[in-house]
Length: 249
Image (cartoon, rainbow, N blue to C red; front, side, top):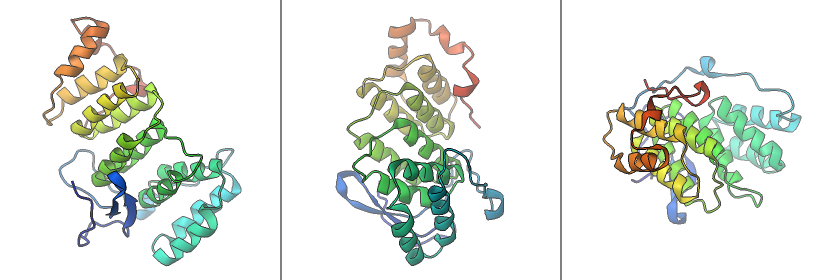
């Protein structure tokens, strides 16, 4: 799949940003909606604004950085100036706080721009929970090509920790938006990094993908589940914790 920039369509949400694709190749990303997916909802600007999350998670510098980025986002030159003066000078804690706040406010293009820089920092260590948050926010805003790019970043990471909750959240987000192929790739990645699927993982993948319209081969997943929890797979019918349940629409 190619992510090179094409002629802008009426659904373009923001100017393109340069992203590093697999193999170090440069791609140009335009954020826009893709038809044919479930739960694609776009809110108007006034409805989509959320107040800054003040408190111990956001320093004054982080709050100012978020506000400055949002004010400058429609002017690329101004955005670059703000980025150089407000973002690149932030410490690790503040930079991550800015990223998560932008995600919370559905400022997808700004969040992706910050994430690009986060990945270049010496202190960067990939976290599957962060990837799950990014994928969930992008998918909820109908930005499925960026989801593909972010997922390619995830597969290229070499130091992923076997974080079961993060993987389950990623699987849940992908299954919820009918992204079965990516969900299966994530399942195999999960096993590759030494994160053994639990009952919640199998419920998300097996029950979730069986209820979607996308055709995926679940034989390997079912075999893995049977080896761990028995041939009957009765546990699939157990009620899951609301915090990790699957929601398909």
